Length: 218
Ligand code: DC
Image (cartoon, rainbow, N blue to C red):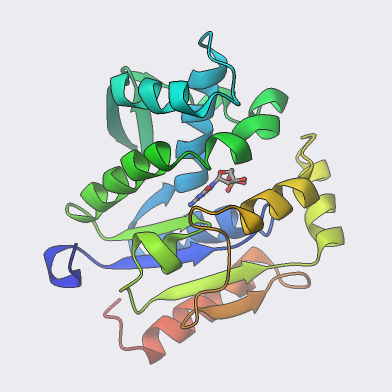
């Protein structure tokens, strides 16, 4: 998809628990853009795999499953939620078993192709803030507005624990960064912001300042 065929996209990538969800959601609200959490989309597909009889290591069967699922989107509070067979799985996405398997399921290329196509379809309809791992590097690689949000492993682990979730973020970072399909890395033209010692408001202020410097009309 060419940039002229879609609305404006701000890409927010980063490792697990880097604060990118809070930043992306608040940034979208501030700008009046629609928020898309691509990690939630991979989580929803993972939940569907776990809810089927398919072994999460069985890549060919996961590829078959994704082709049979009916995917839709619903806009709630200016955030797009993926519907799978008409169901919004938001309440299930941080279950331990989803945390455990999502990195593996998200390496299946057919899963990525389907979800990337959905994100591009969303961008044909709305101005977006999209967070994930490969948004600036792959999904919307031509957007001039890309940020990489990071924080130390210690701070990220503390943030996840404070949310009450068991999540082996170091293991997921390793899996997400070393996989063959669209690994997590800092796109060469992304602006890196370390949030270890910053509040969400401070990070959003900083991004808005940088977007203005790039002449984004906001
Ligand atoms: O952002 P999150 O921690 O909720 O993402 C969950 C997983 O989804 C992450 O470990 C890898 C996968 N993911 C991905 O492969 N590509 C994305 N753009 C976003 C998430």
